[in-house]
Image 1 (spheres, helix red, strand yellow):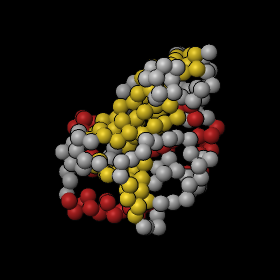
Image 2: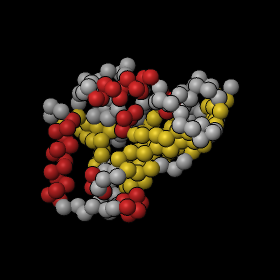
Image 3: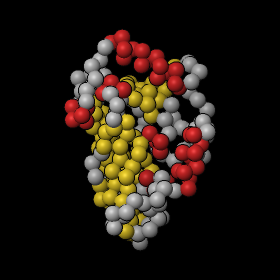
Image 4: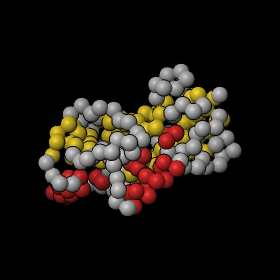
Length: 201
């Protein structure tokens, strides 16, 4: 696996997620990250990678989520009230092709469904609402990394879920996270496993 980073000015105060360190970074001297996507999009067309659909695409690219080490017990799904709730996201390429996808601001790369013990959606935080509004106004900050994931390889990332959703109250929650499929696998999303978490006093 290789990871290509396109440089841009970052505002670390606005970044609410952390990521694992990629193994290899190559800086491409281009003006914008979108140019990187255009370049690789053209390569996809030239190579002529076939597009998968439905269950085939889902099994070709897998997203698994697990509790991060800051839980009450490392690796468990329990956190103390007011503590940040982190998850590790592991993406695996099970297709027979090399896949490409971007890592920008993780709060916007992924979408989560968080339900309380009554099955009701948990509201988003004000921080996240402002961040999403900033994207509409073309004001963004975060990483600009293009992941090149070969068949059989994995890429990890982390998400601070409590910065995106209101998890300040103690109780039980159900979490599922999704992201867009890599372009080689067509449109659609990949959904993670369901994880039940507990916030304790």
